[in-house]
Length: 558
Image (cartoon, rainbow, N blue to C red; front, side, top):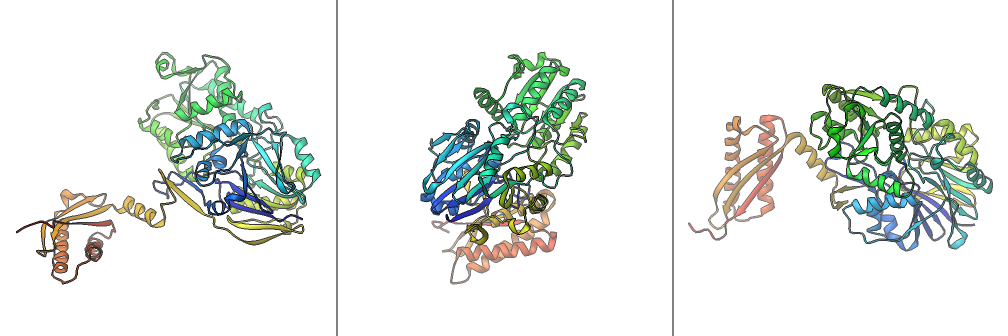
């Protein structure tokens, strides 16, 4: 019997940031390495990644990283892990190319080229009799796979993101026969995508979505701006096909979208119906509005912010005008729903129109309840672990598993960091490893914590109040200042009394402190900060960040 553990480092009780560790005896297999884009509360943060402490501490035991598909929630954190731990990376051809784009774009110093392209029919053998196999699945990007870690006690199967569209294009079709074969061989535990477990509506076929998109383009009076996610290659292909069928041209915005399409074209994962379908910026003026489709994908995978720039007339390439139709061909993340409502209002103010898929059409790259139950029935796992979704979605998925015969005692809803052990065929919780959010801000990884975020929040709400002065410790006097500078707190031209009183407070605190025999820079600044903060709150009921800047002129002679 093998010692088997499953440890989620990200991707449970949350959407995104997928990263799952499977241990078999002394070998570690990492399944996906994703990130999540932050909500508005994380001011200035670029991305959020898992805590890789456990993997760093056990890097000599890692056999490889196995990627299910090329979206940011599955591969986006790869550069930050490779910076700490350099181990082989396995994925399908397109997934590896998209992963390389993320590594190139990240602000990390990674010299890495140990990538291995796998085929869904391939099996990779490791020590202890473990083999890794892959099952082709349907998602919004081609080359998506589920990963099976096969052990002598049964397989640990991780679905990755999937849905089961039986009318999917050949590039996206699920290998139902392989799923059945793996289920017959024996599945010890299934880790399954839960994002749409609560959906009251089942997914529509992609064929129906294509027809709807074509109708929208056909009936639009002017330009059509299609908002989609750059890595949703299936939706991009549908836009290309619909534009060709309605005799329209396409203009692509954003370098990243062009790079993704270039890679997909090179690997024959996307098809452009005609050579002159895509136009460049110089050709735009010669194309009538009713013959143009603009494909907007945004900088961070979410096109919503780019649409706001278009509505304000600040987009670098395309701005909205009357008769434009903005078609939302994407389902925004939960964090972007408020932005979406605000964006629709801004679009209407720009005298353009907004269209979405009709109410009868459900579009998602993730399985809805009947599809989730079919996946469980095909694989017939002994134990069930719902992943990839908030707690309510994981709970709903457990209930679906119960409906198809999985006892609730054989289901477990984990938290990030839980060690789920399988010993003598039984599943139990045996501990915790470090797990949480690591914030990435520019080139800084993990150096932004709650204190910095709190300061940023205060700055965004109440501004900053700076007192600058120069002192002489030898003469025990103030040589110049204090000068008061304020940003985002008060309008200085109409706040003369407040500024004068603030200067007097700083002068008194510093003069009193200099008269004492002992001197400590930190103590002096703290006294100035406390006195100013107290006064400003009494006068304004606001708490700006107070920054005393005190300099010393050591060579000053009276």
